Image (cartoon, rainbow, N blue to C red; front, top):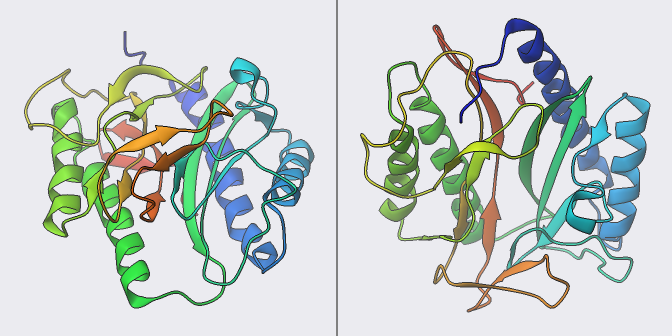
Length: 249
């Protein structure tokens, strides 16, 4: 069942989203060669605590960290490690979900460590444009798969792969609520969208084949062909005035 959020819930989610957006803006200055993904997670945990945010991932199904940090061919759910040191040219995806006064926001951003090839930059730009295309369809009266189809059309126009096994989701009191929001599909299907619905929309795309596998840690998802992967995400509230993106500054 898709829950409709009242104004009080939406403003708590918006506070969480604004703070997460500021956090991922501030973290840019830390993204330099030789920093470990565990050091980044430690900084994120400290930021969340300082701003009265509660991590939604720490403790979730035994997960031990406040963020997922995925590097290069890792798609999502990369586990922060002291041994994983970032290096020049790496593509890093940082994904954080946290709650303010009991209501969550969820977001992910891609970052390069130093310079990157034009090919890699164009690939990441497509992930962001697919996210925007999906968000444009998060409107009152639309259908859920309008979002999915818009993402797929944008990604496949540039001949990139779309991960099938993971998807966006509803969000609110819980990190994961109904509905599941696939990143592919035909338009015009699924529930009719209503004001007060809240979605985490998150394209996960690959530069090569879309097939993935999960590492023995039970979390980290990587591309089978070791091609680069991109993951971006925003939390969006459907309103009568159009989609309200609460994780952008």
